[in-house]
Length: 307
Image (cartoon, one colour):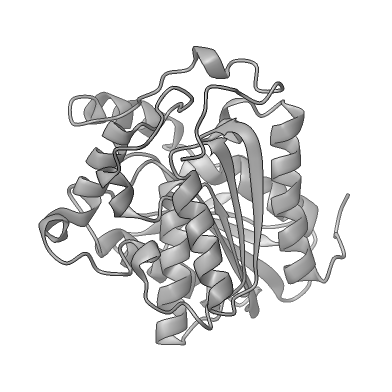
């Protein structure tokens, strides 16, 4: 297990953060707090309906060609909390700096809506984005954080299976990929922050629903996917003090063995969601810049539309 008690020196509040965040007793209050941030229209963006259950928060560049690249962003929250508004800052930056039409998906949450509903909601959002007249369907990327990273990985696999939309890149930030991590007993807890083994067990139990006690579908936990050959290239970023470190590194190796190009960015001493909590830290800014550069290289051929 990559976790230890040594934090990156630029992450100065790490030791003061909680190790655990959400569970059966706290899910209600946490949801109420997060919903407060997602009610209004996003600054510089719009809220658009995908279908009766799914909406997206959309950010379009001020100046764009007739067809611009697209990005679908999927928020985190352990499959049980969070809103699409969590992607506003990243999507706005992608639109402004890269000239990309960026949409953050509002998918339904577990345990009320277990697998496959959240994944199918994200797929509906991906189809919607590809169908927009101002989006180039051949230049669409997927990005996600934490559980959103797990959904993004599963969505890339599902899109490859269905062959209706063909994403060109998956950008996965500390993705939640493997339910089997909940059974591990060798995890060092001391360096973990914001997502604990207890949180992880609750998140997976909620998301898997009835499948938690049976055969887990591979698209529910992408680490179980037998042969990911042919899926789009990936960028995976994770810290050594993240519960998902080992499963993320293992998934990257699985992709590479299947012939899928995969770049891995390991941040020593970084905890789960470090870049969202300590946004000002140089190590967080570098983590963000690597994602922006990867998206720009693939979607724009390396040519920024703005500085």
